[in-house]
Length: 295
Ligand code: NAP
Image 1 (tube, rainbow, N blue to C red):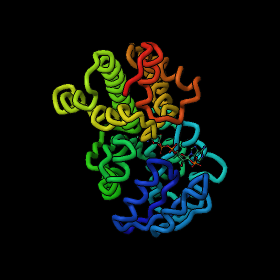
Image 2 (image 1 turned 45 degrees about the vertical axis):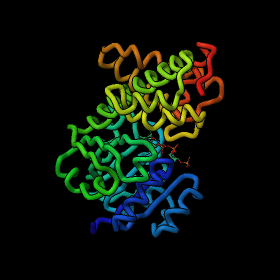
Image 3 (image 1 turned 180 degrees about the vertical axis):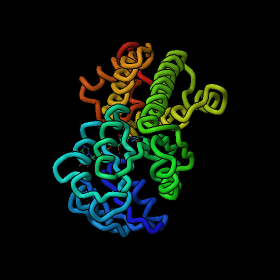
Image 4 (image 1 turned 90 degrees about the horizontal axis):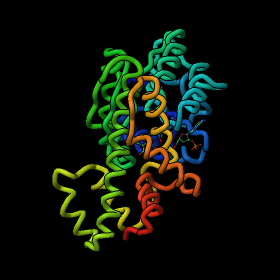
């Protein structure tokens, strides 16, 4: 609790996560590229950082939650990045979902300066970030996981040390195969229900609690019926994760049939300008194929 905590990247996820650290009593210094996104956290008691380097210079543990691999590289290794301000002995925790191999390379660069890193991607959506109920999958050294356990517990309720550096990101991609699989199944099922002429709300009530239930169905099924495309997780970010799955599967030499289909379906929606809608808008790609509209 005495360690000073920094938080870089206050998007949909970072906002809720940083707020939960403040609620748990941590001293938090924040930075976000679009500075207005820092305001609600400053109001809640956080200090304003001037840059990732400034956050790193003033903190013992620095959390990062930005979009993609090049973005993590930019805020850690780039100009005014964490690496240029951080002190030996500090710990960087990356909560973003990025490439497992790039994670290992970034950790090596930090390690050369005596700085530790954990990859700690999360699952549980914007709801999990706000409520402090994220699943956190962590790669890196055991002693650093224990060092940061209080922070993890402030943000999540399933905290699993899954292996060495990069293993957190690999497990997150396992998670994403399951997420997009569940999403595609949900969308296909709702098109089928629509075609079958059943009441969609009653249909969801009937199947959500049984063997076919999933987080995706319980949380995003009702949104589809309401045609509410507000994102917990955007199509653009979901597509980034599917791309990471395909790249990693290629390197590992394993087929990923379902993920490949979802990649193509999301591509059609991105081309139609829908990339900032929620990932459950995948149903629109199936609507285009079937000529039906759900809801
Ligand atoms: P988001 O709302 O789009 O926010 C992205 C954040 O990253 C913003 O703070 C953005 O700054 C910052 N950023 C992006 N590129 C940057 C760069 N080059 N330099 C500095 N800052 C940069 O995304 P999110 O939903 O919070 O997702 C963040 C990470 O969590 C992603 O890796 C995502 O895959 C992962 N994740 C998301 C969810 C979810 O349900 N949303 C769930 C699990 C994991 P600006 O404000 O300036 O744009």
